[in-house]
Image (cartoon, rainbow, N blue to C red):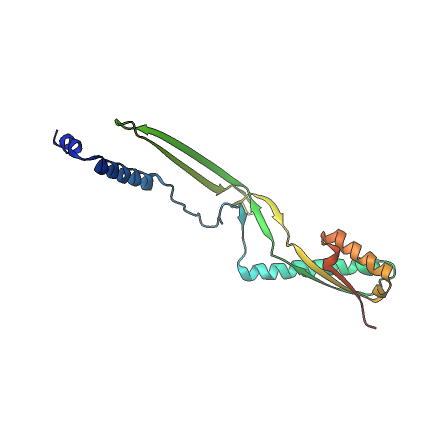
Length: 192
């Protein structure tokens, strides 16, 4: 009875402050706390499996491999002759893993005795990498796709690049192979 008498003696401002305080406490208690699992990046589904130094080495290896392949192709173009190639890439390889996502949403409508209403909404989302048995028998993230580094630009020095038709053929070949716009491909004649 005593508790009820104290509540009845409170004015509207005090009741409102009390209701707001209780609402804030409930909100703090119910608010989902964002916790990252080790090995997971944000909610992008992209998993970086290599430290930064290994990433740069992997990028250099990828670029060197593509340069060798492109050099072999350019040297087979009629009139191109001997060639040297340089490729620049934007970023290292990214691995996209499958994510298991769960989400929940809750909405509460409350009405007090004096006719006031309050709507409370809360949402939570969680995600975790889908794991599968790897070749070694250990659980590994299920890889959806692997994104290769984006090629930014290509320079080709070829003996026959002095001929405009040969140079254009080299530009077209590079553009098709790497999906690089022609303005990011430079073909120059190799010095004798």
